[in-house]
Length: 524
Image (cartoon, rainbow, N blue to C red; front, side, top):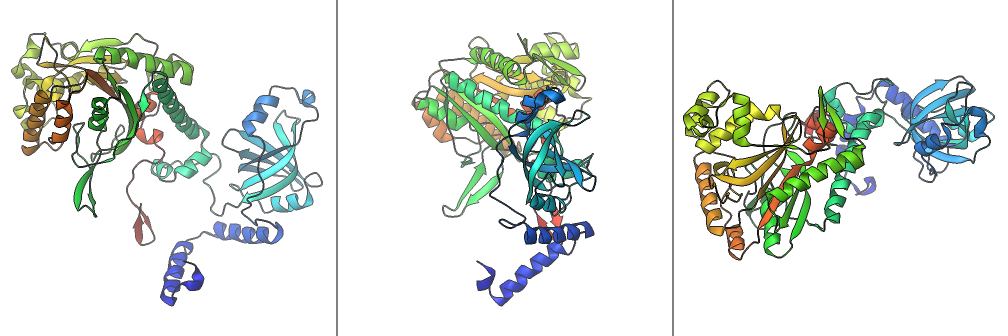
């Protein structure tokens, strides 16, 4: 709907919103708006927001080609067309040096009266820090050896009417950095590098699984039953079906249905949603990869995981070790292995006999912050897991596989044939964090129904993270699922470790934040 066919009340409402926003404009913004008006008067086609001027090269290409050459060795170069955001202006009246960033590198432009076109120099005079510009010219080095573009033609192609933060420090308020990620990215090449590395890691993982003949699939994000993990779900409602739904907490049960259907190797790079608290390692919306492999077991996945992580280090990061905080983490392999009982013994100085006793485990947990009711109602398997999480996890700095999880805390895992109180499962740790969870899948429908029933009882007793009974999944297993191994790897935490990022918000482009107040209205 355009302003011409709005009702009078609609026009009033539109004007109200415009005034609410513009009433708080600073004096500096009004100066920029005046410059924009002048720019539109003199610049012709496209005004202050031109769409016909395009670069034919990137700054990193020029830097790689010419920066190592001596000043006199550069000679006469072709005329290049470039574009980028102006992040620094050193003005000398009839000449100026501009530092620009095009997302690949920072580069210097040299604008000079009588060298730069008359129309281009006139536009330069209306330039502000933060404007996006286009320029053409040849490459040279200044007397100080600074690689630069000698600008022959120049144009402002997108006027910045809101000033960027102070030139040299950018956004220092962490909350503003994440809320206004667009400014954070524009000002900080290190932030762009971290998030570009995330993209490179995801691309590598995808190609790794393609090369091993896994099929990439997409499964539903809205589930009638919240299953596949122990977590509190987000709820939503489908109006047409008048049906309560959950945003998925994991794609596991749908992916295993595909194994039943005859796809023997599947993976999904998936978004999951868990209605839980925020922390340095938790965001309610997160990315993981889950993959399932028929006729394999959890031992096969240990080898695959080690190969995958070492490959990311070698081929993406181009190194065998990474630094996180004060720790140097070796990713080359082979990686350490311990059973959960061995880890609890090691870090609580308990004997193997003691960790098999519920009373001893309860005594270890007495001095922790865990709710005494949780300790009192927990079985031996849950108590062992709580002790592991409380006393051992934080020490697993180097890549480590923890195996032999209690059946009690593993409702979807296959029991160990020799010791049915444990399952064939491992979790993969680095930097004291769980990065991946894998197991030989439970494919006995009777056993699976019993485990679902136990989870339902736990939920009824108040465990908000326990899962519901998924009868359709039990039915799928009754048709027969081949022996299968499956794993989930948390992409966000993995990237945190590999990029030395202390908070998950640093590796997510737009992390969840509290609502921001604009005027008198709250908006996302």
